[in-house]
Length: 84
Image (cartoon, rainbow, N blue to C red; front, side, top):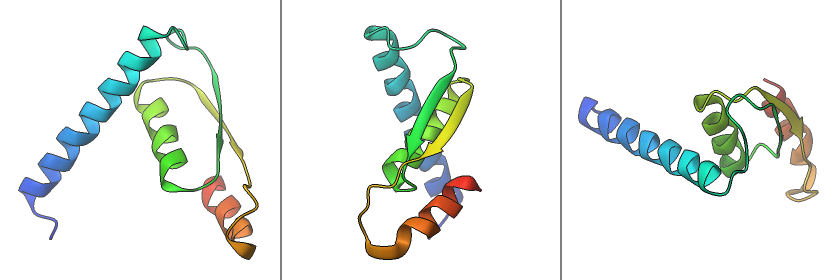
């Protein structure tokens, strides 16, 4: 059930995750503020979350679809999903 309380909790959790990723990037000096990023994403939840987080942090992102060659013929669907 998607109640206002659940949405607020989800938004709070998402903000915490973004802050943790930002702290990790800064701690290990992985990227400079505003530095362009090439993100290779498969269309799965983890890579799409990373793409969203990078955008939330303000990095200019270029996206490349990466096909792991798994899940049978679904890679074409994944590529179309990433393209959108």
